[in-house]
Every structure is written in C-alpha cells, then in structure tokens.
Image 1 (cartoon, rainbow, N blue to C red):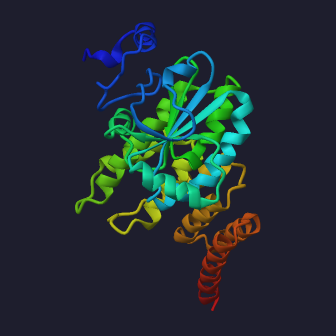
Image 2 (image 1 turned 120 degrees about the vertical axis):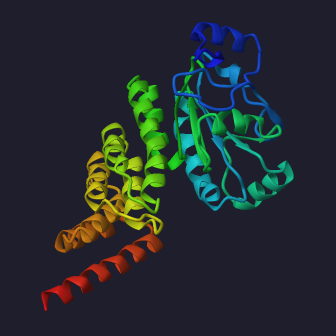
Image 3 (image 1 turned 180 degrees about the vertical axis):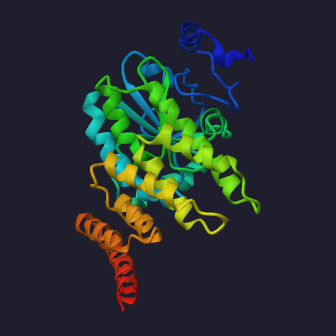
Length: 315
C-alpha cells in the first residue's frame, strides 16, 4: 500500500530539515523510518530545542513520562544516571509529558533527583500520537532512540534495554533488522495473550508462541516478560509451561544469569514444571545477586514456598 511512510528516506530527511512537521503519522510506524518532529506546548526543564537541531550531531532519546505514573517515578533516577553516563558520548535525552506543566514542575522540585535532561509538556498529545500511538506503544515510561540521521532505531521501556541499545548504536553494532524482529515479536505477544485468554483453545497459539521465541529470543526483557505472563496471568485459560520455561531460560542465558528478576522468573518456570530442586537452586542465585532489600525479601519468601513444597513431597 502506498503512503507517505514509504517515501524515500533522503526525501523524508530533506522535508524534515526544511522544517516540516510530521504530524500525519497516526499508526503503523516502523523502526528504520524517519522520526516525527516533536510538538511542544511548554518547556519545563532545560532549553527549548527541536528534534532536527541535533541531526548529524547527536543521538537522541525521547522518553514519554508522567509524574503521576509510579513506574515513571521509579525510572527517574535511572534516566538521570543514564543521561550523565552518555552525555560525553553525544547522547541527548528529552522527557515528554502529557500532564500540566505546573504539576510536573512541582513534582520534579520535590523529587530530590538531579534532573540532567530536558522535560517538556506535549502540545495536545500530538507528540504522543506521533510516537506512542504510531508505534503501537501504550504503557509508559517508554523511550525511543533517534539516530544522528533522524531514523528511529529502537523503542521500549527505558529499563528494558535502552542502555544496551544506546551502547550498540554508539559502537556501530546496532542491528535494525534484528530490532524489527524483536518489535514484531512484542506485537505478536499481545496477539498471543488474546488467543490464550479466550474461552476456547486456539491452535494458532502454539505456532505464535514459537514465532515469539524465534524472533525475540535475543531480547531478555521480552523473554522474561513473556514467560512471567504465561506463568502468572490469571486470565490465561491454558498455560504452555514448557514455552514459558524456554523463554525464561533464554532471558537468563542472554544476560549471563546475572539478573535476579530474570532468575526469579526462571525459578518459577522450573517450579511450575515440577523441577523443584533446580528451582530452589536458581532462586538462591537470584537472592545472592539481589542488592535491593525489599526485592530480596520477596525473593526469600518465594524460596521458602519452594522449600516447603519440596519438604512435603519428600515425606
């Protein structure tokens, strides 16, 4: 189908550098395409700027964020740290909110977190629509990486791969084709859930699940979330525990068994597959690696449950 999204990239770049706003994009955007210009109602922190100002100069990260969102508030220190870490490597971060400027400014002043990036209020959700809606994203916080040539290379939760993606982009190792596969696997994951939460079993779910593993297997966050959803979503009618086990294992292997949350998911998958002794061993590894006290306490409670079940079965 012919539409403006399929224009030659050089033509798109020429239009953008001429100052035209890409407000036409509403749905179906894809990685490797030109980034839409952002449309800002008010700058809350930092100096006013345009997306096009950094073309040919810097990699840009646009993060959609709100003060009223607990996950967004939790990501604030991480985003500030990330900005400092990559600032001298030519990376610029801008947070865009759909909330009133006064509300966000008041929160930032009370947060105690040194804000090292620009924060802007969206102009009537136009920027949100051009990015979030266009790429099929509906959960914040959500970040987009725009390369120096203006192409969108990656998008996702900032704590789910942003740092690694930036390192790959700056190191010339980023694979857009692979990123597209992962993005497609994420879309398939939503379709998979709709199939397995239906009252009647759908044979398409099996093939779709295999496709998600094949296309998204290199993304540990996707694999972990996919496995956890299969194991714990109360609306799922028939759980493919073997699929969840493979996805959880892939997440751990991709991160060198170093992420306690991923190990926790893997242990749960093992436990639900009746591999209780191995589940206990993996859960202990998760606890050893966990540095956050509340998280570690939760992991320890889970371990007790596994140990109690092992004790019952031993009798």
